Length: 333
Ligand code: NAD
Ligand code: TDX
View: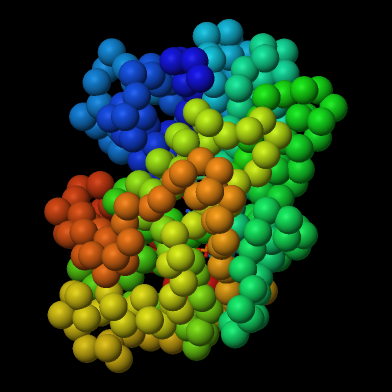
């Protein structure tokens, strides 16, 4: 792996975690390419050494800018995406532009410059599982996305596979389960409920809350991506997960308890159309091939730390909160 790394979407939740991880665990020089949409926050990169990290504000679908940046890049890790399912149900177009055309633009540049490419994707490309099905997703599970968001992520994964096979691009793909941790946008489930409680608002549970998500701390996602970037086999897909299956109802009950509120102190709101029932990752390939293991194995402790982060970093999330809740109210959620 070369030492000049381009991280797209590095001002977002998981991308910024990865930039912090790279600075702490490698001697890489990092360029972040980020459009700073509503979901991007330059202050997520605060405190990093200016000599090793620079932020370029721009669009991954801007071929001219991408071409310029790839001339001085050894490897790219592509996080930039429109990432929220609920938004994709309101207005799918930005998901196509960023997730599909943006990925295509980067792949073409990787092909021209023979740059090592790692593609960040999601378990949602596999669709969903029944709540009581013992099966979990593996690298050979067929693609079956449900939402415009997951369809565009699946499309981008397939572009990567084609560019490996047809053009010899040196690429790997990872599909990770639901992340939690510091600096996640307040539109997402866990930060939304924490910041609602900090604001004296009641948490909002979609439908009955029986849907299951497989939670992993963003820091564990980052260590897995670095392992794949350094030691992954070109052309391969790796699933990333930390055996963290929990129903939304149970996650919410934990948040309420940890924040000193009664367990029934929340509202049931309109369910998400097409709501995936359950995601579950089998990460045996990543663990056995690359020797990766998650460090955050205690979800309750990780959640406590996350709650503490939102308590102490109101300046970070406050500017997004009112508008996010106003949008949810319009949808009856
Ligand atoms: P996020 O919404 O917090 O961050 C996305 C970042 O991309 C933002 O900084 C935004 O400004 C930037 N961006 C958006 N459009 C852009 C464009 N056209 N050009 C350049 N930058 C642009 O998202 P996240 O939750 O950190 O997710 C990051 C990646 O990880 C995504 O690819 C997502 O599909 C994937 N992923 C997320 C999860 C999860 O639980 N959040 C799980 C698995 C995979
Ligand atoms: O207020 C809420 N109430 C609620 O019950 C919100 C915002 C969500 N939910 C439910 C919907 C989901 O079952 O909580 C679960 C998690 O919701 P999100 O945080 O929106 O995540 P999800 O739709 O599971 O997708 C996430 O994981 C996979 C990320 O947003 C994606 O980017 C990633 O690919």
